[in-house]
Length: 262
Image: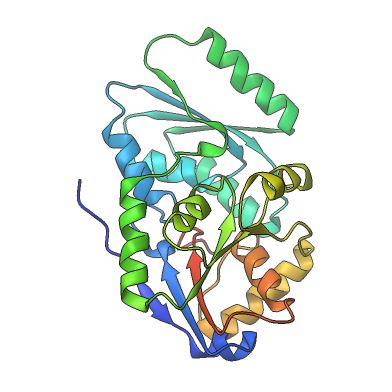
């Protein structure tokens, strides 16, 4: 398995916007096959799968985990049981992208109905079907641990890391190497509350509205030339912008997929 390089950029514009000395961006969105924070872990996951014809995933509608899996495993059918993330145009763009992908079968419904469908198929499935953990969680993985170490070695230990939290895998992996990290919660309120009490260093129990997140993403776009998503990165940047005081040096992990024009 080829180890993927870590891309780090510095943004004086974002530093001035947030009122801090330095901002380093870890550009996980530039990784191949759709990018995103799980790309490194998915490569390792795929390598150890064996003979599988179907993968089942319970996650949000338009999940970029499902999209990345479909590109890593073009001969495998990816079955996504998707719940709405209330991401506006970005969510709709990702849903359309997945609907147009030949080896993805996407169902969309309430959290309850999709959970029931996922569990029903898990009970009745035959050989060749693999069911992932909820949200596509992969746990701590060696490639991501290496990327975190490379990042800390490159930028130094005096940066405070900030990451958007979905499954919590990346937050946990970073916190195992440095205590200077904050995970910004992005999920629906019920899951945010659970993660808030479960995950150390998780914050942002109350998140900005979609309109506020989109406005924030547009401001970030003017500073960086990059348009990121309002679900994860929009929540993260809105959280940082409303803090009265921030660490002087921030390392922000950009974990949404790349190339999504929503």
